[in-house]
Image (tube, rainbow, N blue to C red; front, side):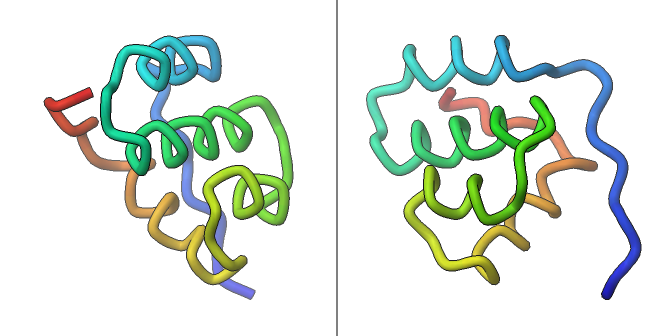
Length: 73
């Protein structure tokens, strides 16, 4: 199993849920809600279910943790 990636400290689950409500892009909204689940301590399996991807698909969320949020949110 790989090493854990630290989450961004400038975001939290509530902020990500707010951004998910504001976006008009359904796919982006699902990804933001999946990330919110991770930030709130949920499992990767739960995040994958919310995001509509397989468990391996949550690896894209790992990439987010150290990078900026898309400006279209």
